[in-house]
Image (cartoon, rainbow, N blue to C red):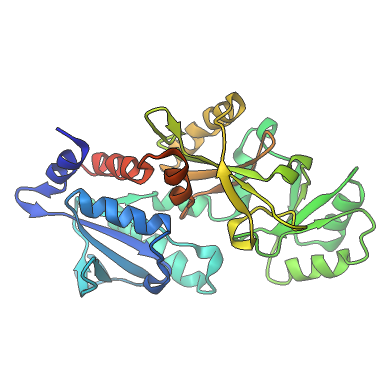
Length: 328
């Protein structure tokens, strides 16, 4: 049985078409080139009734059933859905890009309730809650992460920078897409202002600057604690900075290029894979500079359109096959 036929069989139980709901920040923000859009298509091809809903449109009724108002894919009709045991929910939210902090926290609570009622939720809500902030990276063995500290105290952050041998990176504890990430040096005249901006709304991370950042970072996709692989191809993409900006995030001008899955990257995945699986974080993106993990993306890791294009395989299909198997 080929994967698509296998998926169709699993998506039907006693003749009932099972639902696959993708939970996002805003349905209107989904672009066809996004990994989320590609996963929608893969779920559709595997026989699910596919829906996409805004996290703010979740709720729970007097019957304790979790509900969501969602748009059906691909016909764009609107539906009030009740989530049942055996349904699949794929969380693709980005709390760091949204001012509705309470909405996202409540969404994880509702997804935990749905999971308790037999709905399959990926990634698992409890693991996502633990990994909401960049502080989660402190659970990585020290050999695989840069030297860093977290504080809201300007004196502590300034001392880290001033005592560093070279440059440091300052960034908010929560955030995505390279927003408010600064490269600073000891004695930097703007250091006070930068720290003030970063700590105005919360805590900041001070991290040693890795000189290999000049070559960009590498995104390694991890599925079920292993590198995401289709045949001989592994979903690895290097993002190179352009111009004078040291950041390599695509949303600030970084250029994606193909990358080699090196023995060191394999070692890194082996080191963190068990941690991710123990927290139910089945699909993640590891951002690596040199031989250090600088960030773990657990909510909505992207970049698979580039990986598919570079290596000529369907990584999103492999992800949905794994998710469907989990649901069965």
